[in-house]
Image (cartoon, rainbow, N blue to C red; front, side):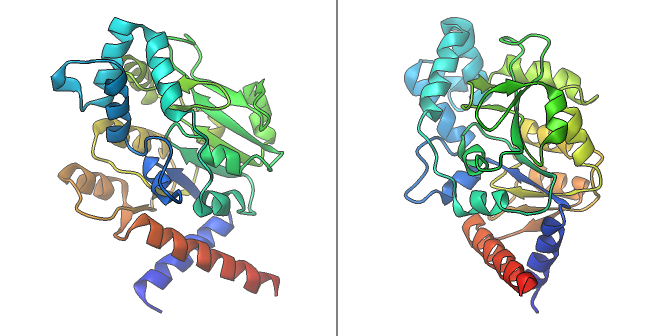
Length: 288
């Protein structure tokens, strides 16, 4: 057995007993056949935003700063309109989304740190599932998270305790309602409180305890990406994995070491196909 097989077996073993929290980033949309119909990176998103509203040249490549400029000078409604237009197309769930939705062990917690609806769509058949969305303080002052049933109706936090599958969207989402944390102000409000965990749902804090995290389609180049990952995985297990192909930045390498995240240096598509194939094979063997 080579190192890749051993690593896959270790990850699958933890997945199948509910010991792993999948943490999805925008790069997962690279798996959509024919290409993603919505922006699949912060760089792609900011390009779409600045194509709709002019912003100063020096911040045209900075997503949160460009979003803040649009919010300040064009109004919050304009920014939300641009985000809605960018993520309005339905994103078909990929084979990876379907695989994660089919994990039998419950309760299952999935973190999805992007604005598309693919993971939520894959989970729609799970009647005892629900979604938790981070919300902007500029639109919902005093409230950090909204809770939704699979049919899109809003509910209270207490119902989340009964769900067997929980999808946590810390940045908000296009569906079932348009909640987006994207501007500097949005994140300043969250980061002011995140050290004491106020913006993170209690049920997430409970379910992450002693669990490993598997980062898929994520990068850790910016302070914002690292801070959200660090705070969401706080008080979890002491071992995690991240599929990170290509050259790492110095900050990424330091973050992996700091958080004891084992790097899997292969393209996401290749890893996901190995993971799904091995996982399905194990289910067949277990059923035999």
